Picture 1 (cartoon, rainbow, N blue to C red):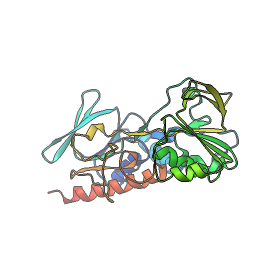
Picture 2 (cartoon, one colour):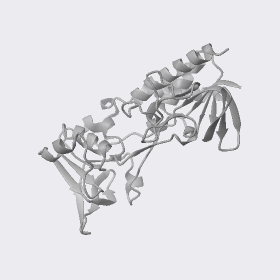
Picture 3 (tube, rainbow, N blue to C red):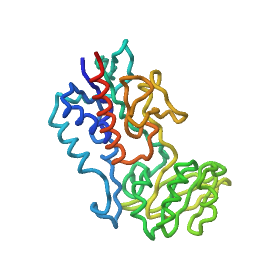
Picture 4 (cartoon, helix red, strand yellow):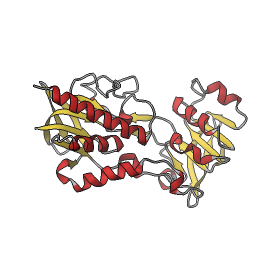
Length: 301
């Protein structure tokens, strides 16, 4: 029986686990890898590491500690979580069943990808999936964002404040209306290509251009110094979807203390309905979730 099981080894999960260990809990982190999205960093020919605030120092410190503390981690995916009275069973991919008094879900999200030639080759080399993390690097540069929803429009609105020119490639016939739509249509340095599909990513050492097809089937090539795929974030919440409350986007609903709708289950990071998909935000959320879990465990008979 564990006091606390943390599911997910990204920034939120690593932080939550280290906080739990330092509170002298019997903690186990279950994850397929350590580091999560911090293992992927956008490389650009004009950018040095010191120019980017990544939060990597904190995450890498926690990651190194967990690599050393083998007893506190189990490297395997989790298939589901079930409830047994006031305790929980974590079912792992290999058939394991681990009993715990409390759980922190920090499983993050999956990025919806283009699945076109060149995407895999240039991933994190001029092409990535988080414009909000890297937009300050594109002062007076040309950029492209692929997507049509709120996330894509929010991303290109921020990029347009610094970029020389920003192009929004919208796969849908018409841009989905959001709080940014009218401002984007009026911006002098923004081009919106509605009903356009990206069919290939091209470049040399870095991604340099996108091959796109319009509604009529005409193919053209668009150059960009940076490309961001912002089509959707899919929360990895399915392991608790039958237990805790989710919002319309399938994110785990939490309060300011990272409590879910079920006492004893907490959640942190991008899998939740918290604000902003950022490493440093996830680190803070992981700390809060762990502190809330400690309070919960202290309240048990």
